[in-house]
Structure formats: C-alpha cells, structure tokens
Image (cartoon, rainbow, N blue to C red):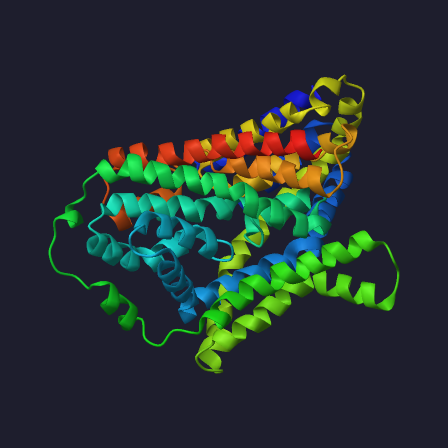
Length: 448
C-alpha cells in the first residue's frame, strides 16, 4: 500500500503539472501532504515534516542557487557570455562552426540557463552560419545540445544542485562538478554529430534570405565587451575553490589552514566569491546594476527555490513514511551490487521529463523519490552519489519536446517547423540522455 501511495503521489504531481498546468511548487506540496496523510502519518507530523523538509534543503543549498543565478544573469547582461563565445570561436576557428557552437553551449550553460543562453547567442549563431555557409538548423542544434548537456549535469545550474541536496550529496559538489563536466562531454559530442549529420539537411526560410548583420557587425553591435579573464573568472573561481575545499576535506587534518581551505571551498562561500568576481563585469556601479540586475536574478531564482524547497518537503515526508524500512527489508542485492541500479533514477526522471517538460522539476522530484533507497542499499560517498546525480540528469534530458520551454526557444529562434524540431532537437536529446546513462553506468563499473 505504501508503494501504491507514493506512486499515486507522483501521478498526482505529474497530472497537476502537465495537464492542469499547476505550478510545480504547489503540485509538489500537495503531493507531500497526500503522501503524509494517505500513509497514516499523524496530521501534525505531516506539517512538521513538510516544514523541516522545505527549510532543511534551503539551509543547505538555498544560497548556492541564488548566488549561481546572480552570476548567470550578470554574465548574460554584461556581455561576458558573448565574450566567452567569441573566445571559443577564435580558438576553434570558423572552419568547424558547429563544433564551436557545441563548445560555446557547453561552457555558457554552466552558470546561464539554457533558454537564456540560446536567446543571447541566437544572432551570433545565425551570422556565423551565413558566414560559414552552414545550415542554420545545424548550428542551432549544435548550440542547443551543448547548452543542454551542462544544464542538466553540472552545478551551479540549480537542477543538479537541487538533486545533490535531496540525496544528501551537497557536501560533494566538487566531485559532482568534475564528474558532470566529464560526463557532459559525450553528450555534447553526440549532439554535435546529430547536428552535422541530420540537422544540416533541414532547411529554414532564413537559410535563403539575404541581408542581416554579419559576424563582425553582430560583435560590434554588442558594444564594449569585458576582457576574457573577467568573463571566465566568475565561473572558474567557484569551481577551483570548491575543488580545493574537496581536496582539503580528504586530508582529514583539523589544522587552521586546512579548515580555512574547507571554508573557501564550502559551496555557499565559493559561489559568493563568484558573485564578487562577477561584479568586475558590471559596466557601472549604480542602482540599475547593483539593484536592478541582481533583482532580476532574484526573480529568476525565486521559482527555482520554491520548487526545490517543495521537493525537499516531498522527499522528507516520503523518507519518514516508513518506505526506508520497507526497502531495507527487501532483497535489493542484485541492484545494489551493480550499475543496473542507475537505471531506476534514469527511467523515473525520463518519464517525468517527458510528461511535464521541466528538467529542473524532473531532477527535483526524482531525487526526492530515490533518496530513501540510497542508505538502504549502501550507496554513499562522493563518487557513488555523484553518479546517481548524473543518472538523474541523464533522465532529465530525455526528451525535450512540445511541453518543454527550451524546445520552443530552439524552434522559434531557428525558424524550424515543429516536425523538423522533433527530428532534430527531440531526437538529439533522446540520444544525449541514452549516451549519458551508458557513460554513467560504465563509470560506476570502473570507479565504484
């Protein structure tokens, strides 16, 4: 009955979100109360678990999500994302434009949401396509799949951070970032080849249109862009600090210097240093930037925080419903002993993503559902938990179609029809998800 209650709660969340278009925050909260009440939990205990789950997750990753969003918005508004793209183009060269767009997407989407990243770079992508005489659809899919890979796999993007917090891996963000950056590479490569082999055969009206700004005019129209060092610093600095803190934590010593390194590597501290580094990108220190831009970031962060917190509440109620004890008494040795276990979060996340469209919601809900399984199956420590996050992320990218806002951003800004977008974007994300789960399972076999 308990499994049936939890299954019904997931169906409730999906139906409310996908069919009735209820915001995921309310859907997850209603799902949490449904599980608590239907499982026979005392009513006041249900309220206590909801409050503890919401507040507990905010305590561990709330600041990280807000700081990461602020960095992303400043990179977007200051032209730093454009500068990063321009640097990659110079390094890769214009003879491989699709590869350049894939790598640009891979880098830009670490702090910037994939939707925003695609919109920012749409004019650059179009100008480069005309200059290189490459199909616009091909360039669009190369950029979209590059953005999508790191969006679902690499912190400080909110989805992977939320998943890490839900399964108790918030202290292993350094490991998750490193493994995420590695696992995202095959996903980007698959997207690149799909863009070259399939999307290049799709013709959109703008392929034959004359006029428009050329590449140099597009770059000039953006005005004065920040230096390369300043553009990359807000991304690189937090990742380096988190990495240093993770290494210091492995040392095990309790000295002042080691503790200082661990302090710098704490995700909230490292991301706040990233925010300070992003202030170097501000064109002026005035109300428009210090209040307006950061206010825009807080508006973007608010729904993510609410969804993440509600997911934490959902997970807390499920954890305390007795499901952990039930799982502990089951014979799960066959799955616990191998990489096959990773198929469970992958399938759940893929089903949720396909049903309701949001990768972030899929990451949040799936991580809350599987969290009670992990201790019972002896899955703990940095690398195993990081690979669980990768498995959830693989599912959360499978697949992008008409109920996903990113699908429509790619479609509208590239001029593809819905049929062509299914052939190019949806199939590409399916291949990316399958590739990512295969790579994750191979890593589990080697490292765990």
